[in-house]
Length: 508
Image 1: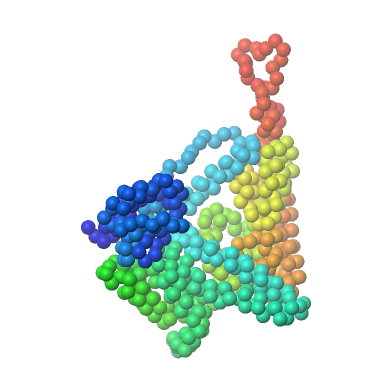
Image 2 (image 1 turned 180 degrees about the horizontal axis):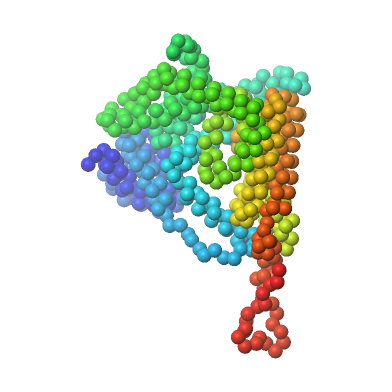
């Protein structure tokens, strides 16, 4: 039996004794223990686990910890994660006949079914890879938001001349995370690709270490931070592959000493003498292209990006933009792409308002829109997309038209020299106002972004109101679902033969 088969057999023996794949919420490991998050602790068979030859013991803590020993645990954990993923993927999907859709709940159910089907179609190797990349950066968003808001507050205080003794401290707080973001990217990358997270962070830390300025590559001295988040991502992926190679060939008795040493040494040397330079060139090219695109074709680029963003989200391709946003923020202080993409949500809000007016009899859908609009204004678009516009069909398309015009508006101003950017990724709609930045005054930047939102709202509304509904769609949905569900009263004398108990049809 090969080493991989042996480790997979150990993982396969453990999995049913901890409640199966459905009982696992998280998987991690330390030097000696497999650490599991569990949904239901009562499903674990402790004595059977302890009886397994490969298990040295179990420990109850904030996670359920199975002691496998040094070397072994690092090899078994990836196999265990793979089995958990396979078990989750094999879970039966629930299906149901599609009912007649009239209420908001039925519409939302249809939207959820569309979302689930789209998610299943997105499970291609390329899109799963993009999802891995997104999973690296998404945990960084809270820090990006917090530091971005503090940076904006600091800039405002400096412009006003207030609290001069405090602004240097705020600058340090806002900038500290960005100075070390490569380390966090490396840590998350190794974790996501199945390696030891801290080794990924250690290799990525080389990129931001001030001492690299003493090293020359291709006749040029390296700069601390050169390559940025892209270099950190590449370095950590390389570290994962080196680590996995070591796990396969290094004897278990030497694993604790040899594997981390070789992982950091090999991937570190490749990072210094290759990846930092290459990733630096790629990062610079991304920034230059984004600036060129918006300076020379801003309105057209904004139109396409704003209009196509939600379809990209549905296809799972939007995740490819996350490293680009992060690279632009690291390089320029803000991403000029996010405010344009945020216009897609504005189009959805405008479309939802039009749907509200076009369906005056359907109180159920109108109540859903009223409850979801505040979240939509703050940039949380899923309730409106999957609960209203997407299941209806044409309103989703007209909402994208609103996003396109809003994006074109902001792109036009970028083309005229007024850059509108965001210091963080994640927020949208009105929630993006505290994170706005640009090359002109803050007031001007806010005014342009607000103008884009207004254009998105109005265009989404007009396009949906006049072209978002066919006659058939109005006839189907502009009904009172409560009245439709109530049988009409039977005339005195009882129902006639052949129609007993049959309600009169609702006339629309």
